[in-house]
Amino acid sequence: MGNKEDKIRVGVVLGSVSDIGKVKDLFQILDEFEVRYELAIISAHRTHALLEEYARSAVSRSIEVIIAAAGLSAALPGVLAALVDIPVIGIPVSAGPLNGVDALLSIAQMPPGIPVATVGIDGSKNAGLLAVRILALTDDVLGERLVQYKKDMADGVLKKALDVKKEGYPIWEI
Image 1: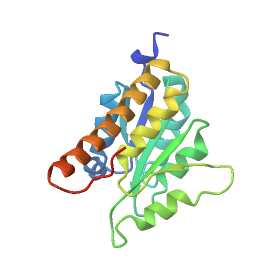
Image 2: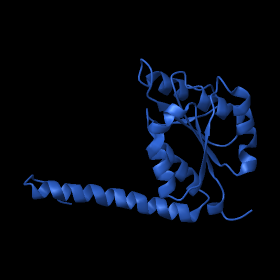
Image 3: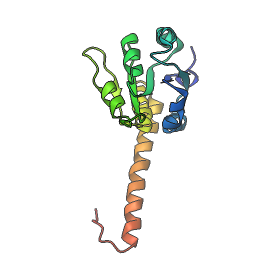
């Protein structure tokens, strides 16, 4: 079956090709952590049979986590969660007159028994990091990369604090 790095582990499903620009950070995070993924453009409303086929075959294709991005009614993550038994992360996409609030509420308010992990509106970076955390539960190498990523983030904050101190502000000393 090959090692985990050889397999596509994350399925990214967008409800529309117009959502690609909203999820660039997701692809950057998955690439940074060397997590292989596939991208599918499937509408929950217009191509329902195709969505069912995608979901039905996900596990046999080694998919461990699905990330679904959609705007407006945002049915896509919920429909996928109803069809699979692996984690589904929903990204509400800013669109339409409510600028993504409708999508956020649609994804977050799932019925009992059909969970969808929901990130903030256009929160594709956090969706990628959440997928990495899920995968790291059974992948020590990925777990080590995640620890280093968090350390680098903390170091970046401290560096910026020192930069502010150089400008003469009285910074709290640890």
